[in-house]
Amino acid sequence: MKFRSILANTPALVGHWQAGLRALAREHSARVDCRPTTRLRGSVSLDPILAASRPGAPSWDYAIGWESRSGSECVCFAEVHPANNEHVRAIIQKKRSVLTWIGQDAPALLQLAVKAETALNQPAFHWLATDSGVAIRKGSRQSRMLQEAGIAGPKRRLVLP
Image (cartoon, rainbow, N blue to C red):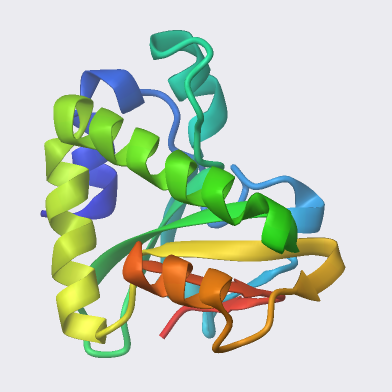
C-alpha cells in the first residue's frame, strides 16, 4: 500500500497529509535530505493527532513517506529532540507510546514501516538532534539502549535512502 493511501484510509490521519516535508517545522525539514525531492510522498505532524487522541501520553514528531531508490514506498518517523544522555529513556518511551497508537489506530502505517525497515535494513524511527548537537557517544550504554529499542541516532541529519 502507498503512504498517501494509508493516510487517506486511516480515520485518525485523514486530512493531516502535507506534500513533501511541509508538515515539518521549517528548522526541522532542513534536517531531512531526500534527493531527488520528487521521491518524497508527503509528511504528517503526529504531535497534534496524538495529543487529541492520547492527551498526556508521550508522542513522536513526524511521519515521512518517500520512495526508496529501489522504488518501494517507505515511511519513517522522526523525532527532533535535544540529544544527550538525559533524554534517552524519554525517547524510548516516546517510541513505545507511538507504536501503541499506530498499532491500534494506524496498523497499515506500521506494516509499511516494518516493510521499509526490512528492505532498507535500518530502523524506521530516527532521533534528530536539536541545534545543541549530539552528546551521546557511540558505543556508550545509552547508545546501545537506543539501538536495542530500534531507534537510529541521535544524529544531525536524516538522509532518506
